[in-house]
Amino acid sequence: MGRTIALATPVFFALIALEWAIGHVRGRSNYRVNDAINSLSLGVMSQVVGLFTKLLVVGIYAAVYSVAALWELSADQWWVWVVAILAYDFCYYWNHRLGHESAVFWAAHVVHHQSQEYNLSTALRQTSSGALLGWIFYLPMAIAGSPPQVFLVSAVINLLYQYWIHTEQVGKLGWFDRWFSSPSNHRVHHAVNDRYSDRNYGGILMLWDRLFGTFIEEDEKCVYGTRAPLDSWDPLWANLEVYADLARRSWRAERWRDKLAVWLMPPGWQPSTVGGPAWHKPAFDLARVRRFDPPMGRATRAFAVLHFVLALAVALPLLWYSDTLPIATLAAAAAAVIVVLWIAGAVMQGKLAIPAAIAIELAALLALGITGLG
Image 1 (spheres, one colour):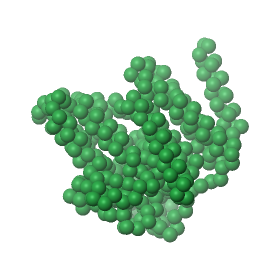
Image 2 (spheres, one colour):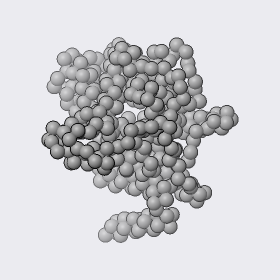
Image 3 (tube, one colour):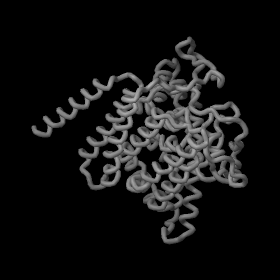
Image 4 (cartoon, one colour):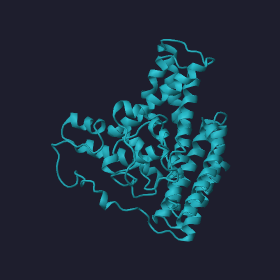
């Protein structure tokens, strides 16, 4: 999958440029440098972390397939591929739905929803921890006999399809919206409006949403983000914020069953036995939603863009050559990418001055040089 994403990356950026140009011409572009850099940074981070976690997913799937498959379906049969793509989309629906209805799954999925903009850079805003539990939902495919290579290709097709639906520049598409995941349907999914909450989970098809009562059409302006805003450009904190909150809530819960329930119940659930203002969050009010947009000067923007380009320039070869690189080299390079992305986020938010960021980077390079010489 790493090489597929590496090959698709130029297409991703070409379409982002096209979307920005169309929005600019129409006078309604919704790109901000800080938000886009943060979304793209999270996408890069998810891919470099995925070089390690996806081995777990594929390994578990292959192991279950080898010992529990009821049939041995052949990858040479066209219908096996069609059934697998449909089956993957069905499993994805439930994975996605539980990602909104159970707190521990939301902790992973929240990353994709944190942006207060809705554009093609948002599509690349992906979690780095989703693979830890997400594999559970696809085991029925292994038991049904879908070969691992068919499963992997189905996953790539589902992922790539969803890229184009993250845009406000494409309106409603008539009959297409009724049966397929489309920009209109997916805008609803990303909205925090009460009317749109927890709707339209399908990856490719809206069939599952219609069958299970989670489909709704777009009929009012969408407001994007999460009901508990991230308010940060830190890509590490973006991945950890909900886990940290759940750990705090679990620790403060008095009963053991509540300590576990905090993780399994819907996001925001809290035991009735615990009170106090530090525990309870205020009720969500759409009218009070404010855009997180700390000011950035030209130097800050240039620094952030340069560092993202640097991280991407390291990440793409990692994705391409990951199968041949020693694990230590792979881990060190992945860690370097994450640090560069974190520094860019800290500078954009004003938590780290540019001279201090450069000093940290020079010190790190010096330490690596000394280590290498030793």
